[in-house]
Length: 592
Image (cartoon, rainbow, N blue to C red; front, side, top):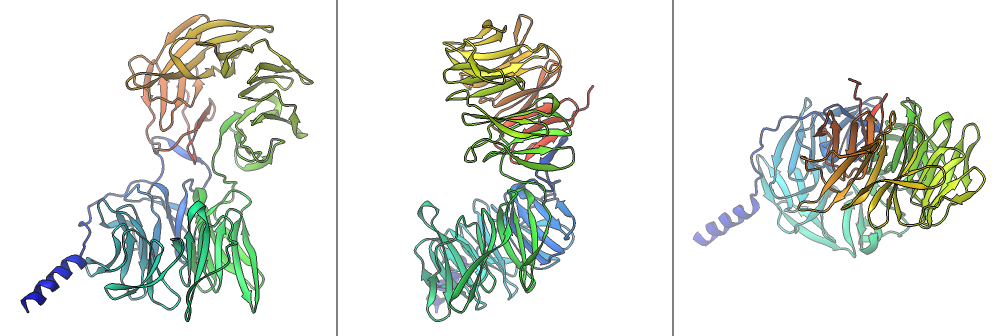
């Protein structure tokens, strides 16, 4: 009897694994702050990774940076969240009893607000399930836990890390652990199947999606008599899968459905992704309803009819993953360099998509908006020029290793190639005489003077006089430099990487022969990616994860932006500052 009691105590200590008592975390306003806002894509900007709803008019979605959004079928509202952790799991029992999780945090919605329900320090929740029996299941680096009253019990069997938990087509709860499927029975689990590849996601029913080496995707279906059987492998770029009397899955091209009629298997695309709205989460709603969420705040609700699905979409402007460059002539004429020969244009109200004559398998690396509606785009070693009222046409390539292109006018384009600088006169290219070294940037001041940063043993700033380049200044010790010209004057800004402990960015100001280093006394982070002068002596620069401002002779770091991988920056005095961080952020800065 003593041995039995000791064993019971030991078993209880193993099974009972409560999380820490919930801390009081005050909800924080969602999104960037300090004047920064999302510019593109809207309405949300951040990726949504999981979706759930009681109806197409009462939908919740969660995603990056603790983003929680509610959609009533017409309006998307960003809801304050207690955490900034990436939220990846979402489920509920009703409109006032919803759970979401990410990292160590478990959140609950009670019909009024989202609050911290529990947390698991130094552990990660990967999935959750609001089961039909009223018990909450969470899967993660701790295996599988079920909430029993106010405490948690760890289910014996599944190993860390358990990636997914779901209610199968027979009503039983199952959990995926590596490549294994367990059927939960009380406080233990029975090993049911060991698949070939690791389980990536369940399918909310009789499906699981697995991934192996080199992202080999497979989908398995549970047969009541013969166990789990692999379906065919023709799933494309699989992102998520759902079981709705047949597989429904998302991929790069949209959402597809597989129907089986007798021996005939037919795949059909039920929603086409033609605007960069990749789908990361699917869920059912009602008997035949389908919810989807994804890139940039995308939200969809589909209702199945006799012939096809009818879709209600919350995100309608073109999405796409990343802007490689921004430029424009004003707030109603902004151009964005995208991928695959695409560019986007913003007219002050609406985004539209255009295809350049650049190679469709390459990124559009740079874009420049000229007066009169002309636009120059660069991708690989190719250039494309947009003529107002005519469209995009190809310009003969200036040569291999095209690094920079700058148009003073449509018939006066400078291009930096591996062989040197070349000039386009509207009919042909000719050499500009600068063949040595590598170009780090081209810029034109308000007087029309072209300047270049050239490395030939040392980085130097040079000016084109119409026939050759004259050296204005040299920058020993500077590497990976950037060049920026003032819009309203003759000021030039030069910045780049300076080795040291720690390494830093050094910035110089040049005007009419006067060169000064303006970064003394401040430790600017290294790996400068770009600079832009909003107004005279009001300079913004972007590094891999920060934005800095030089104004009134002093430096300050911009706050309110998330820790993102920033890539490019641009400004216009009438609009403000724009920085690309997937999404694109902007800040209006009134003239003083």
